[in-house]
Length: 101
Image (cartoon, rainbow, N blue to C red; front, side, top):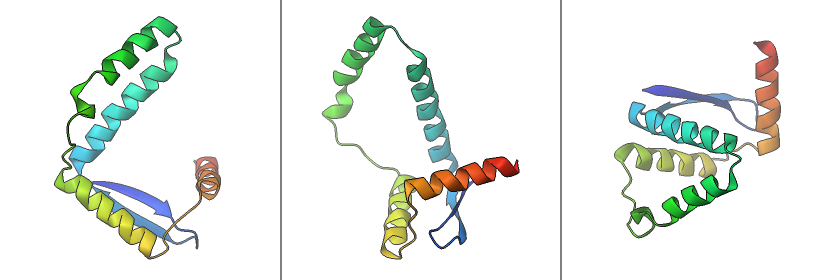
């Protein structure tokens, strides 16, 4: 298991366990996104867009893993219990954390 740490609106810290499989999938997805952001060739990007648009993913129902369902349930619980943080507050918190490093 991997751990996700954060801070709530009321500056209380929390942690959540993230299953290893989900963390690996997120790492792959983020790696692809990073590489896509570095591409500036319009034709190459259009070809990638065409590839993604024509994939079967759009026509198939996505089956969630147990871990993904658990993360969604945990997120719903956070929302219902007011454990929310705005993007700007999260950005400030991240900057403060980075300054400490």
